[in-house]
Image 1 (spheres, rainbow, N blue to C red):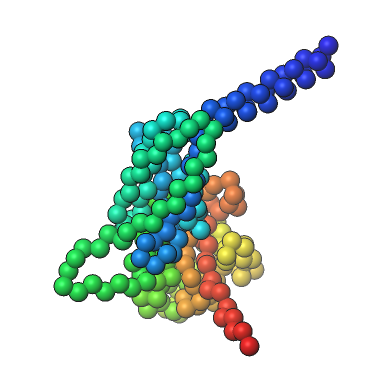
Image 2: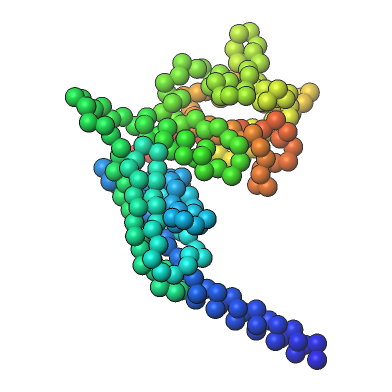
Length: 246
């Protein structure tokens, strides 16, 4: 009797899930820059007058599910680009692919000079805005502008961060007033072991600023981060090595 009950409950649960999936609609696609075809990471995609919305991933891809079928307006926005509002007619159970190319929002002037810095900084700012935690991001283009010799000097320019120096050179960082031994340092997501035999601090003077492709500072922990980082977690993105085909 109990086995029959569980079997009936399982069938009911599967049927309810399938019916729910058939009732709602979804949209997915890729956001790109209309001027050069590059993908736009961390852009905002939302369904107007609803709480449905997502951010594009690092490849500019997005997917929004659970949309009520009918006439909806999907809004695509990205810092430094013109917003696009696209009317869409969705049927129940439909998964509609919508790829959008956004126009850069450039004011017409006598002369316009376009560099890579604007796009890099825009991506960094959008990553901060759409993050599910409190974080600061520095792009590679911004790092190139700074005269810093090592990673500690560059990191010390972020809000809430101060630098501990040795012989005038930045060595460790204090995040939110908390000792360096209570911070977590990673390179491309991999934890760096301590360089000090007395505590868990890491000497950042050994990382050259020229080797950095970006910096991410997480001031509030999320489940995917190490739990011992009381002050914060710093992730240094390192440039990829040059590959030459012979």
